[in-house]
Amino acid sequence: MQDVLQKGLTHTSRLTVGREHTALAMGSGDMEVFATPAMVALMEHAAMLAVASSLPEGSTTVGAQMDTTHLRPSAVGAEIEARAELVAVEGRKLTFHVQATDRGETIGEGTHVRFVVDRARFLAKL
Image 1 (spheres, helix red, strand yellow):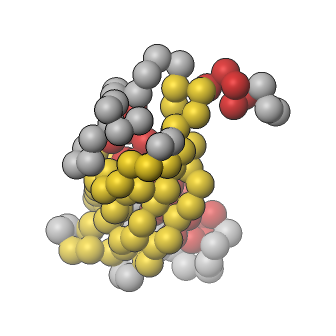
Image 2 (cartoon, one colour):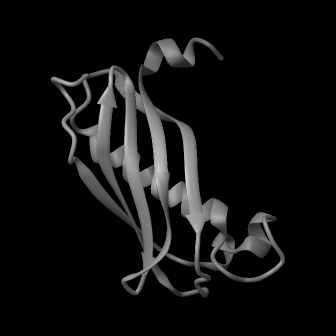
Image 3 (cartoon, helix red, strand yellow):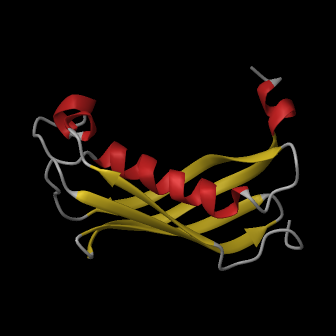
């Protein structure tokens, strides 16, 4: 994969926090603030898209590990950005630095690992 995917690939995904993205709605807490699972999903989305256009035909990536912190609350209506940068390529294993912001302030960050898989072979395992 090192010849196909190069460190430094990035993507930023954006989301306006709706009631469906709150801890109360997602069952991860009891307040109407941006939920950690929603932040993690946005980070994963950014990482997936950072490399998607560089993958061989028939390949995709799947999330395998997320080590993240959620540092600050965000309100319904907030504009959240999650940025992922590919920082390491080890065979099929891809490691990303991920960061989420609200109005330019960091609300979460961490490391995310994805693996490149053949889409058809992966789905055949179901």
